[in-house]
Structures are given as C-alpha cells and as structure tokens.
Length: 151
Image (cartoon, rainbow, N blue to C red; front, side, top):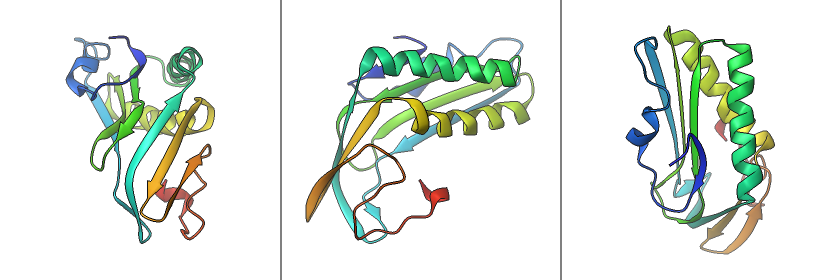
C-alpha cells in the first residue's frame, strides 16, 4: 500500500488514514466516490476503469504537492480503483488532514477537481442500452444532461 496509488482490489479507507493522521492534525476529511446506478434516468449496469498506472500515481502525488504548497500543513492520501466496479463500490478515496478543519475541506475539494483534470484514468460506462469510454468526466451518455457541479 502506498500513499498515492492505483489499486485493483476494493479500497480499505482506514488503511490510508495512516498517511494523514498524527498528533498535529485536528481535522480529517474523507471523500469517497462511489459508482452510482442512475444518472439522469440512464441506468449504469457497471463501470470499468483503466489507468496508465505509473503516470496516474505520479499525478496523484503531484496533486498532494500542489495542496501542500497552497495549504501548508495539509497531508493528503489518494487511491483510485481500476477494473470492473458495480453500483455502490468505491472508485476513489481522497483523505486530507490539517491542524484545522477549513484547510482539510478546501484541500479535499481541490484534490477531487484536480484528479478529474490531470490524472490519466479512463472510465467505461456500461448501460442497459450500450457503452461508452468516458475520457472527460464532463462527458456523459448522449441522452444525459448533467450539471457540471453534479460530476
């Protein structure tokens, strides 16, 4: 297990806390992204994730470096799962901790956005009526309209 990693097995959130918790950190924020079954009326049967693992892990670490620069004292750990995931399974976990809660929240939101922007992870959505590789998290099944804030 690494502080920033791509995994093929179910994510155990507690294991990643060891990287962000110590006697100086008073706030810990944990974000988990789960596979949802329905998006604007379109049923997802399952998702498949693929990644260029060496680069993806490097970019996850880069996100943590960016966070440390913006919010000194914040610690970060990120894991993203690849392979076939069914509804409700955890696809990603992002943990951020800081001496005070505000920076932990800000850093966590920043990490989620940056992950979607720069990490080479691709998602294949398999629906009841077809499938499509999604390289950009803002792109969805042609019949689905999604708010940017909902991604």
